Length: 156
Image (cartoon, rainbow, N blue to C red):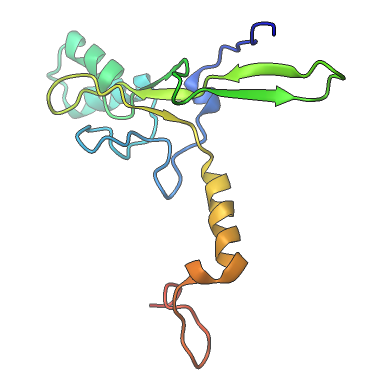
């Protein structure tokens, strides 16, 4: 088999957002990036410059590189590796490595780079799957009023 094609993307081109379930964020509870969506380094730097004008250039560089919302796109390790395939080529499908692993770059409370990794997941697809499961057999809808049938999670 020939080597797999690779594509160079920037994280902001691929990042689908965090959604209401805080997907695509750091899952390490000891990290200050826990549940924080991606933010641009220039935006982080500007926000810290305005909030703390006494910071030095070196400190602002650290915030831009390791502040809240700092993630980087990295090559997939074995745990997160995916291979995508397009079968539109007769007898020779086009195959490539999907390297959509994201690593957290924020400093933990111990002062080390978190470096937790996760694969990008689409919040829209998760919402659709939850809807599908709820509508499949009603188990996820929860209990409802016996008289009118209104679910308690919709109108508590």
